Length: 262
Image (tube, rainbow, N blue to C red; front, side):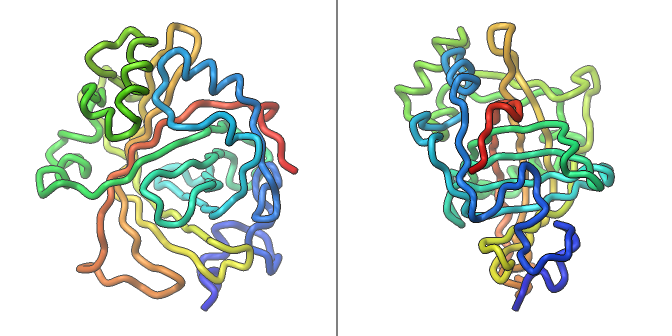
């Protein structure tokens, strides 16, 4: 069953190849390479993004997604995943552009992420922002011990020493003067092949962007997301079988000149 028999319009275009008409002309047949200087600069200043810089010379796209967030109908997010389907640790390129003109790009992020299930009902309530607490508050913090989830302990210690944050890190939400802001929700549609014959639909329950300054000259972004997979290869997943996942996405902003698509 072709997942794009009912999701194809999210990507746009009439081609039988569902990976066409995408930002930077990236598709499953392209190789993507990155200029490492922006990422290296951020890492040496303590950014927590998890990437082997040597691996950025040759990256193949393993999955492509389109995200629509409620309240941002004039914008579209595309993600180009470089990690295998189902990997708890993923790397991807995220591009924000106009819905009606994908060449009009607002932002490009190189991202590394870790997903994990919530620990219990209190965790679920936190990620849903219930009672105006949890995700949506002015800041999001990680202790040193928390960060060992994302990077080896030696690497965490090195990054914290570089940034001068000995005990952990804190990221601020946009408009931090507001006590609480409701997070975004929406839909992510993912394909694992050029024809869209395999893929997933993910319901984004909550998504909130944050950032922190790195020695005054750069920023690291943190996106905390809470989502469930609601269908796979066109087959609906029953509510009782849907596993909610929290995803922590560390990201560095890139310019289009930092990326080469072959």
